[in-house]
Length: 146
Image (cartoon, rainbow, N blue to C red; front, side):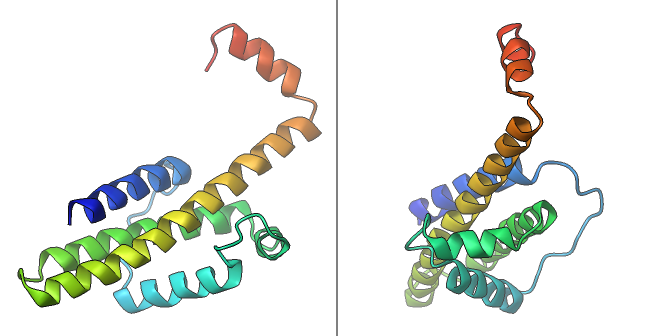
């Protein structure tokens, strides 16, 4: 049980940092059916067992930066909804089964968020390189501007 909450906490930290604060509207939590369908679809599309394969590149190249941020946000909201639902299940065999299912999905969710975060960072770097801003970045960074 503690492992699930630790894993969820890590996911929420990564996803929150990756999504940022550009979403000004408050969205309602997605239903667990939507969460399951979306995460299962994205896992199937990306083949998370091969995070650097050509299949991943094909999928990532079809996504805009906003698409990636939206996916990260949905995964975060789904994780919060999962944890809330788990808290409502009384201790016993049902809860153990629920924890096992949640743990497996959290593993997939963390992997997806990590893939999306790496994709965003790669795109940021490519933007900086394309626009010849690396030396400017290095100068400012050495001057303590962060």
